[in-house]
Image (cartoon, rainbow, N blue to C red):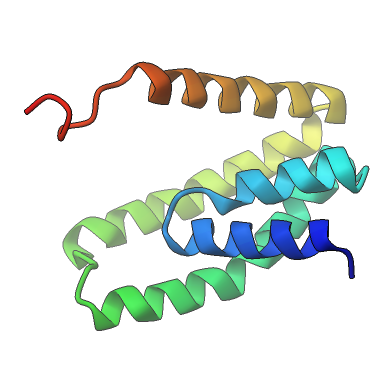
Amino acid sequence: MNWAIIAAGLISGILGAMGLGGGGILIIYLSIFACVNQSTAQGINLIFFIPIALVAIAVYIKKKLIVWKIAIPFAILGVLGTLVGSWLSGMINNNILSKMFGVLLLIIGIKELFTKSKLESK
C-alpha cells in the first residue's frame, strides 16, 4: 500500500468523523490519482463512509452531542434525497458529474474564503 492511499484514507476518515466532508478528499484522490471514474469513486466513498459514520455516531451519542429532535427529520429527508440523488447520478454522464463536483467544491471554497467566522466578527 503506498503512502498516498494511506494519507487519503486517514485524512478522509478524520474529516468524515468530524463531519467536515472527508468524502471530498477521497473522491478527489480516487478520481485524480487512482484514475477511477466519478460514479465509481462516489460508490467507493459511500461504502467507506458506513463504518466511519457508525463510529462517529457512537462517539457523538456518548458525548451527548446529538439533538434527536433535529437529527431525525434531517435523517428521514436525507434518505429521500439519497434516493433521488442516486437515480439522478445514474442518468448523468461521468464527465458532467465530475464537472458538477468540481464546481461544487469551488463554490464551497470561495464561500469559505470570503465568509467571516462568528469569532472574527466579535
